[in-house]
Amino acid sequence: MSSQEQSERTEIDELGEFGLIQHLTKNVELHNASTLQGIGDDAAVLDHLGKPIVVSTDLLLESIHFDLAYMPLKHLGYKSVVVNLSDIYAMNCLPTQVTVSIGVSNRFSVEALEEFYEGVLSACNAYGVDLIGGDTSSSLRGFVISVTAIGEGMPNKIVCRNTAQIGDLICVSGDLGAAYLGLLLLEREKKIYIENPKIQPDLEGQQYIIQRVLKPEARKEIVLLLEELNIVPTSMIDISDGLSSDLLHICTKSEKGCFIYEDKIPIHPDTKAFAYKLNLDPTACALSGGDDYELLFTIATSDYEKIKSHPHISVIGHIVEGDKKQLQTKSGNLYPLTAQGWK
Ligand code: ADP
Ligand code: MG
Image (tube, rainbow, N blue to C red; front, side, top):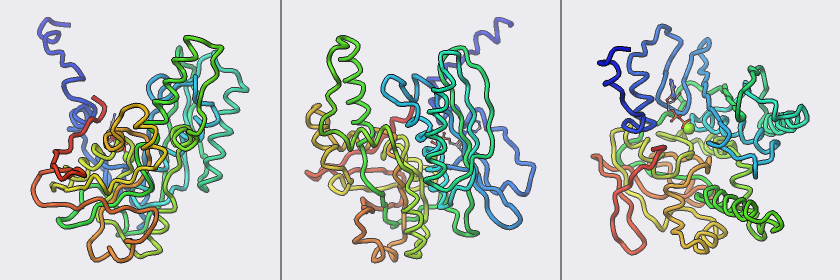
């Protein structure tokens, strides 16, 4: 390598996750008319004989995305599929197939991998998707999982991130922040266990937040509900990185701003209680914690009547003109929303 090439080293940190993806894919050219949409959304959109097909892929790495100290392999298999299906639902589509690829070291027995596959198949059964292939390789260290999900949508009903309009209402399904607090709880108990293996983990009364991290579900019923109510969201994304980061994706891609209200953000009572126990602000956990796999979407104000009293959908604010993204706190103060992302 010449000295000049050496001096041109750029650290990944300087770009961050999203900057890195953008940088690496800036020269991508699409060669096929059937590629309706490539990089940039929860899934790519392909044309299959007039019917839109969506494709999404995710990588899960041991010690980065999961810790086998408290993640049972069966749950890991289930979660690996579910997080990919979530990206398909986020396009307002229904998943139909998955491929599952794994890299494993001899640290894992056949029985252990059977457990993982029990979870994979359990998710396939629960969501009605077919496991149609994958790849298997050895890995020197750590368990590597890559899942690709394929889904089908209706023409004109595929929902992307970049189409939110001024005045649209911002909606979120379910509740937020629980998975992050569940993870903090499991991390805390792991640390205590490592220091003293005689102490049994104290998970009493925390079933909800633990279940949200160990056995997340994708929001199929929300996509079916929207269909039933005859609502096509104007934009949608699944919340994997925290409300703040994912709402900023919708705003940035749509070239709009947003205004949300702290007191409208849905947070489960168990999540709040555990956050207070750790001296954390539940709102901050909902904004910046990840792994919720709820759907975040915008709707035209004319659709408000159809969803306003639905128990699993909260309207948390609206899209505004310009690029200001703001949160109004319970006490009436305004804060700019910031993404934490991966950096
Ligand atoms: P999500 O959080 O929904 O999984 P990501 O933030 O990982 O989405 O990815 C954003 C977009 O960038 C997606 O369209 C994804 O397919 C694409 N992407 C991510 N990594 C790469 C890569 N290494 N090469 C090409 N495209 C990528
Ligand atoms: Mg996504």
